[in-house]
Length: 203
Image (cartoon, rainbow, N blue to C red):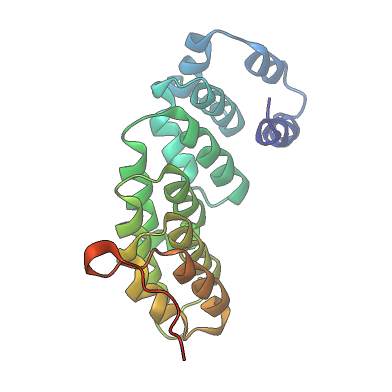
C-alpha cells in the first residue's frame, strides 16, 4: 500500500479506539462487505471512510458518492484521502463533481482538494473550473490564498492557453506572482503563420 494508505490507517485506527471492526474492514478483500458499510445505518464515520477509500483504490464505483462527500469535508485529512481515492477510482462523474465543489462559493474554504483533484484528473472540466475559482480569489481582501495558489499551480501544470488572462491578472497579487510567472512560462506560445519560429536578430 502507498503512503496515503498508511497515513489513513494510522488516523482511523486512532479514531476507531481499538475496535475489532477496524481490523476486519482494513483486512477484508470482500468488496461486498466494504460496500455494505456505506449503506448500513449507524456506521461511524471512520468505518465509512475506510470502506470508501478501499473501494476507491479497488476501482469500485459504489464508493463514488461517499468519497465525494468526504472530498468536501471540513477535516482536511479526510478531503486529502478522498481526493487520492477518487483519482484512482476511474469514475467518469468525478471531474464534474470536483468542478462543482471547487466552484461552490458557499464551500470555498474546503475547495483546496477539489482543485488539486481537478489538476490531477486533467479532465475537460478542469481548466474552466480552475479559471472561475481563481478569478473569484483575485477579489480584494479574499482570504482563501491557499485555494488561489492551488489554482495557479494547477493551471500551470495543465498549461492551457485559456488560463493566460487570469494568470496575468494574478501577477498583481504578491502571494501569487511568483507561481503565476512560472505558470505563464509553461503555456505554449502560438507559432507564427507558416510554423516558422524566428531566430535571434543579428545586429
